[in-house]
Length: 359
Length: 102
Image (cartoon, rainbow over all chains, first blue to last red; front, side):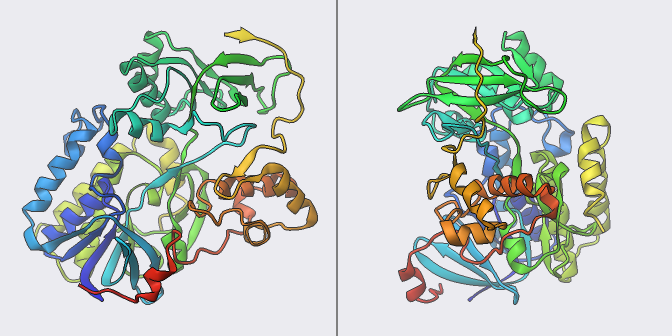
């Protein structure tokens, strides 16, 4: 049984920041990451970040893991990293079971920070299993991590930030984006991203959904249909689009199974992507010593995930007795950063969602 | 873009795949709901939907939407399935070997 002060499940933006801040206070941390590398979804985000300097604004997502790794290295032996390691279970007594290269490992931490992120939601429509139909995030990985062109003509389903950003990156890769469609009557993502793809001539069709995918072996054509104010199809409004790729970008859902396993109180909050844990200001769930940070706590963005990671790391360390004199200052700074990231009309939905789960 | 008119009522046609891992269609899920299986856990036990490599991460929500539609409820009113270890399929031999400490 491996002992550690704080086990951090997930080595993405939230998990890395949690590790840095907890170890900076003096706690011994163990990051458990499923992939062969740290960084999570940052490693494919070739666009520059918004927010403020503290959340690496104007830095490209792909460059952020290196910055965080340098911070981690300075903390030396306080930080342990387990790669290729999947957490299989989180039990009532706080034991984590992990599979690493076909080995079964148990870890007994004093506290746990769950930073597992989120997975892409899928849509039900006829022939949705044809090759050529992907999650938008998967296509981003294929292009920006593996250098593989997914196809030639794309229909993007979903005009949120992921759909808009991936559309732009497809255009950058020389791939034709035939249309971006969204069932909602309004574009969900930032207009700065939407304007960019519109300037490049890509139509954005709101109040439209996928009706059919066509093809035998691979995707050949997509039929979309207009929706009325009650989300019902408008008869006769079908449009056929020739396409060999369809990207589904209809939202993310928190990867919360470990929280369910250990018995955290969970609430269904559509604004945050699905079931999320009840937590306090310090990001501790209803189960003592189990904290959350990032998309698993409610789907937002990498910027807020990083700040949540820092906050959860700080508080988890402090509650185990590791706190330096700058603790209060750092904690208040995180809270202020989150407040500012979630301010204004853009953060309205997130604020509404969080008001239901913070106790 | 070519515009054409389709008069098809089967938008969610019965052949639409809901659980990709176990190849369970919407038609099969709907038939189970009609027969009285009204929770993700019940549908999982009778059909294997959600028991494949992705462990329901793709189909769980689609099945819940279908139950919600049938019962006229919102997703928040539905019972969630039970989550148990392991979070992904593993080989029995990994467990047989017991715990491997450093």
